[in-house]
Length: 393
Image (cartoon, rainbow, N blue to C red; front, side, top):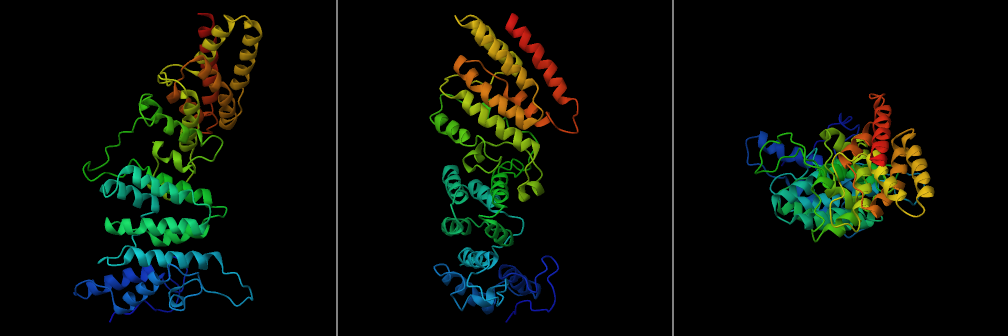
């Protein structure tokens, strides 16, 4: 019988005295293969997997059969409250037990985060894209750890049926962070993994490096889903980029896999998030696409000025527009620029004036980038010139 790794000392990768049970399971399976036998799980693993599955409906710390599987130790400090890490490990163990059940190979797959697993599930065609996204978004919007685990208990068997693994060490960290200060980072990592354009589909082969067109460039106002899609994007207004699950299907940002797995908040992601929310507000109620190439904020504001001048109260309106646009040009950073754009876009919506969202995303990305110290000045000069040309022509 193969026995689990029990060498005294510290596990080098994590600083733990022993690997997690799901890591031991992989070692156990690999040991039989190295011995030249048919890879299989030992009785030790099989017995503990049954215990893990039986712990699904039980509270952490109440099942004696699960206690030997914990690597997070309880300290006798007199507290009745279990540590968050212990509770997270309990749920991770039970989810792993469900996932590994009847699978002939280890389902613990390092570097496969929950978002990546759902992306692979979608591409396996075991479920429709809408069904996968519905399950992932339900998990991401869980109000507490208990609700999240309930969603994962329904998702994990689907991964098993499709032959898709999951990094349970990473899932343990995610569950530990749920509800804490790293909550948004966990959400962002799931969303970035799920929308990774560099993960090749089986029929596509290697990713060719061609960037997918941004959502606003392909938006179809006549689509039956158009209204729901725009509502999903508007829900991200004022919220941290990458953390709004309803927006995940519409992101196209390229990012290194390492950064995706960490849930990194980059300038590219922040710029795309802001541009998506602005476009959704701009597009609302219009039956033609409001993304209009080569129409800068200066040109759009100048066209608004011409329209206002034609009205009966044009003098007051034009003066207000000039002040509004002047304040926009003096934005000190990308956040201030986004704030002023959020007040300009509803006016463009009302007047039916379009805007180039590719240009807008670039401006938001580079406005205060220290590597592009002249970017803001260049945009200010160009937009100011566009404004006066459009207003006077």
